[in-house]
Image (cartoon, rainbow, N blue to C red):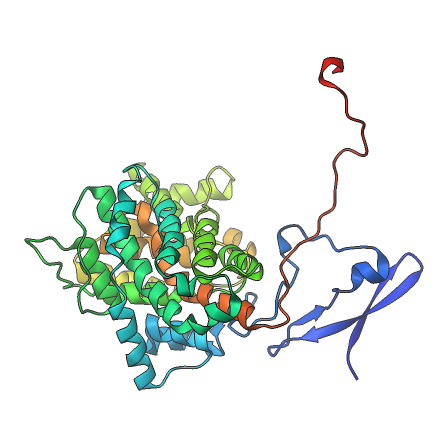
Length: 428
């Protein structure tokens, strides 16, 4: 017998189905609430609203669990790569060796962008934010592949495999070109290298000096990207699904995702962490005074706590170890890492932070790793977008392949003026 739940409004009871997820999550299916009762639910920020059924990512925030298609993030971090995890997120299974190699080659072959797009960069001032450029260029990219960006669902899905590999490949090329444009340096063409090795080559190579990765930057960057590949229905991913629900093609949808990611409360959080650590260091503090100020409400602690995780962010554990190894291999004793460790220790041991569940999140360490690799702070959110591209693509695919998918159209509670008569301008 199907399980149901009861909502009592005034003196009448209404029955609604209970949906159960494979991990035991339960939801009251209120899709018929308005037609049955005349009421809607109010959940500002959708913090307690399930907007979709999805097979991609599972998060248990209370217990610090993150899994992609059933695989724990710890196992993927130890054994997988960014491109393999991308295929897992998009297609639902770990790929066979031949499939993964074919996907890698497809990504490599699509690294260059049409020369006609080079002139697009000239239209941006050097002061333009990299995220504004990235969003614009990704949307423009669809114009060069009209067969893949028709807004005809059947046709766009017919080209899905090609489009997915193309976007994962070209997003890093556009990112590298954006950096070099802003720095006033010539573009560097892609090479036959690994995904992250190629990105670092396009970012930092010069005609007279090829970039040499002698401290494991490509490996650390691959881990960073993999840990950001998908994270359930966050702001940018739900934006991609919202845009896709209207029938928009994949290029337009991920471009919208970039815009949603841009905000400082979402993708810009890792930038805020570095700025916080730099301010602490500039004040001659090892973190001790800052911790006391934070406890008094006099300072804002960035990179701690999470909207979903009420336990340690599992990605932060992994990146914390990576940050140490990267800085050690680079040969830099970064005082910011010492401060970060001080803050981390306080968060794990001080009753003030423990009672409030203010554990370090993934942004806490990601900025340190990107800084050590040489990525400028204003490019941090762009790096996040590169990593999140597979998740956006996978979520677009779920929407596009669902024949029962409806356009997303939230309701509202109107709180404005009631009916008024128009007053001519000479009588106001």
